[in-house]
Image (cartoon, rainbow, N blue to C red; front, side):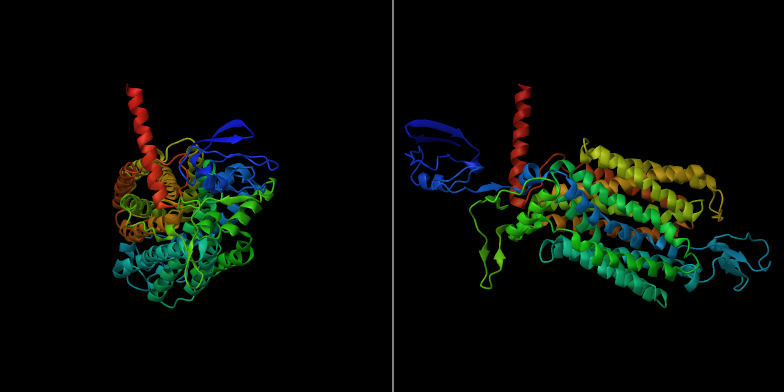
Amino acid sequence: MHTICLFHGQDISHFFSISRTVCQFSSSAQPNFHSFHSKGTMMEEEQTLVKGGTNLEGSEAKLELTVDEVVEEYVGSLGFSQLVHVLLVSLAWIFDAQSTLVTIFTDAQPPWRCKSGLCQGYNNNSSNTGSVCELVPGTWEWVGGHTSSTIAEWNLVCDRRFLAAVPASVYFLGSLIGSGVYGHLSDTWLGRKRTVQLSCILTSITAFATSLSPNIWTYAFFRFTNGFARSGIGICCLVLTTESVGRKWRGQVGQYGFFFFTVGFLTLPLVAYPTRTDWRSLYKVLSFIPLAYAVLLLPLVSESPRWLLIKGRTKEALQVLDRFARLNGKQKLPSNLSLTDPTGSSNAAPSTTSEGAEITPNNREKLWTTKWAAIRMITVMLAGFGVGFVYYGVQLNVENLNFNLYVSVAINAVMEIPAVVIGTFLLGFTNRRLLLSVSSFIAAVSSILCTFFSHKGGTSKVQNNHGGSWVQLIIEGIGFMGASTTFDILYIYCVELFPTNVRNFAVSMLRQAIMLGASVAPLLVVLGRLSPSLSFLVFGGFAISSGVLSLWLPETRNAPLYETLKQQEEEEKHTWISHNDGALELGK
């Protein structure tokens, strides 16, 4: 907008953006104000906001900025305070990983042996379920005793073998349901921080209760509740970390959380090995970690300023941003600073109910009733189903490799590290869509190659503590690295695809799709005990489908984080039109 102001006989012209049009005057003079606009413009100019200026009466005028602008200009894109914030929040991923993957050890089929030559003709230390079923009961025993796993304690072999998949499947179903509940709580009532705290406390309680299970059905029930409880950790931690940093660091910061998930995965064999003869002790040890975190560390974390702003708690949002700025060594935020109303109407104040509760227009927006957002969400969820099926399925399927279980799990966990490092590095300059699809295809090719090596290695499933198929293990590790990269990138991608007022809900919907895929994977793992090649082939097919679906999503690299669905729709439409106009100009 071009505004001309006459001040003491001088014609001063200023060009300002639409959102901050202003004329600056000296506080000691009386201006002769003339504006070439329609009636009422003078009143508007007197109320206009100014960056670092003064109003007509000489008092300091307001400075109105978005959260992104405050972070970039006053707080810092990624300073010391945000690093500490990200570190404290991301620690929760450690026991999220341990809670999810503990069944690799507690529900694994342990090795067995013959009793003093009572079963002649069978190899000791064999884990061939078919051979066990052909033996006379009492002629063989589990190597680690009947408490070494749930399969050994409740005799989940032969005609009961598929019961072994029930606890893991219902765990992911619990996560599926919990993701929707926690996503709603996080976006509406509790916020990101308190939702994480609630999730951690419930995770601790349900994990301890699981260790007391008297039978397979009670065990499955508590695994379901544990899956429900922990589902709020990942979605809220991811959003809480990415909403506190600048645009440049969103992808990398999101990856830091997955690094701590890797730490949890990597430390799991270290905790599981000392408790290898008693699966209940493993659950008891793991139950204390999230409780300690929720009580001792999480209170030090700040709530998301974006969520506070969306809920109309602008003062608290400014306090969080000011705390970040001061810890980063920056100056205190200007006293005249205010945050832009995310609905796009800078002068609109939230309405209130008769009880005094604030109602903002953006809270009435619904993702499923907005066509473009609904289509985008469905595409993300379909891709997420395949990603969850492959990512969790490959981890649970390590028992079907021709290798020692503890070594296989440790190597898979180590392969998460390059996945996080490579993903973090590539996110800085690579398109999200390309990175997601390529990593999916790498996982698919590796899984299919494992199929051929499974045929060559045979399906005897002899438990070998010192050797095995190194080639198959390396290929499987590369495939898992690709699946891990896909898993990590998809979460970052989802955060950037949706605005603040539905972002946590969108991530929770993705989480539900991933958990649904993961809930089916244990059934394939049990089937893989009979045919390992079939399980790897199916994993490869789902990885390909996820890679293809990701090509339908828009690119979000270097795009801003929008606050509302309406704002994002208008801005993306404007960007699309500008891009097409630029392409036409180049074509002339």
